Structure formats: structure tokens, C-alpha cells
Amino acid sequence: MRATWTAVVLTATLGLAPVTTASVTVANAAEPAAATTIRPLAPPLPNLPIVPPAPDLPVKPPGGTDLPAVPAVPDPTKDLAVLGSLGGVLDQVTKLVTSATSATPDTSVLQKLLADLLAAVKSLLGQLPVAPPAAPSLPVTPPGLPAGDARGVPPLPVSPADALAQVQKAATDLVTKATATKPDPTAVKDAVPPLSTSTVTATVATATALVTS
Image (cartoon, rainbow, N blue to C red; front, side, top):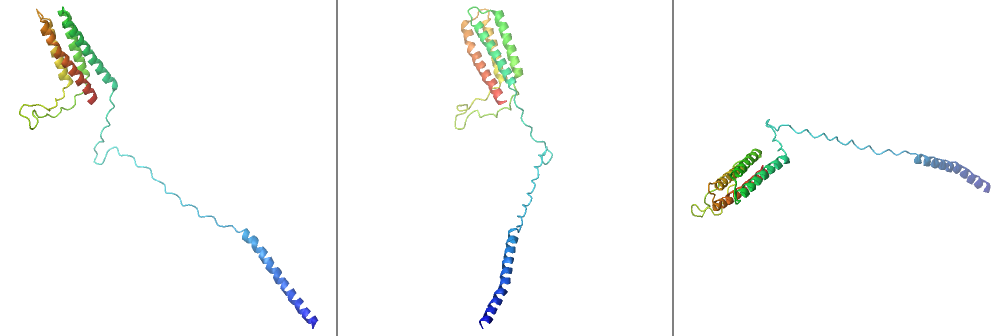
């Protein structure tokens, strides 16, 4: 009886051994397979869209009309030339007043100085920029004031040409009084302020024309 149980146990033991061995073999074979498995790569990124280049600006807008012209850059050398000519006018006015108000004015010298002044004015007029459009006319009398009352009305701008014409007129009047047969010192002295005022006005008008041109 003991021999029979012993044989059964041995038989069962021997029968399990191959199963166990096969299980271990299969398990060991699965591990390398799992370790060497290559994972698939991530899908590639989609191509980015190509941005088309900006279209060229049209030379002419719709309708065929030309584009507005770009304003030209002012030439500073021209402004300097005008200021130089203005300085020449001021210099001639100073010489003329000095000679006319001297104790013994010389007629020939005054005539020469007047001719030089008129030539300087002509040269300045030829270098001035084109005058801007005339300003709109202002009412002679502001609302609420009596007729003819110009209080509060700003003076109209004076053009350089008009101001220089007043310089020529005042200078000619000064020379006429200073070269009279019997010059009146008081009359000569009274002729200086109008020339001085018109010269200042011409200076301001010329500078304004340069700035606004």
C-alpha cells in the first residue's frame, strides 16, 4: 500500500515538472519580447500654411485718378538767400537814414544810397516765394459795435511786396526832404519814423512768407 502511494506521488510530481518548466520558459521568453517591442513614433506635425506675400500697392487708385503728389522738401539755401537780401535792404536803410540826418547831407550821396536801396528791394522781391492765397475779407465793424468802429478786428496780413513798396515810398520821401534847397531838419526828422515802421513791417512780412511757404 505504501509502495502504491509512493508511486502515485512520484507520478504526479514528475507530471507537474514539465508543466512548471514550460511555464517558466514561456514567461522568460515573453519578457525579452516585451522589452524589445518598438513603440510607434508620434504622428508628424501638419505643414504650416504658407502666408502669401502682400500685394503691391496700386500706382493709381480705383477710377484711374493719380495719387496726390508728395510735397517737396523746402530748400533751406533759398531761405538763407532771401534773408541775406533782406539784410541788404536793412543795411541800405540804415545808411540812408544816417546820411539824411547828418548835419550836412550830401545830395549826390543820398541819391546813390536811394538807388542802392531800390536795387536791394528789387533783388529781394525777385527771391520771395510765391504768395499764398489771399486771406478772406474780415468785417469792417464787429457785431454789436457802431458802424466804423474797428475795435477787435485783427489787421489783415501785409504781403512782402506791399510792405517793401512802402519802404521805397518812405525812403524816397526822406531823400526828397533831405535834398531840398533849404532842408528843414524837423521835416527830415519827421520822415524817419515812417521809413523805420515800414522797414519793420517788411521784415515781418518777409519772415512770415518764408515760414508759411
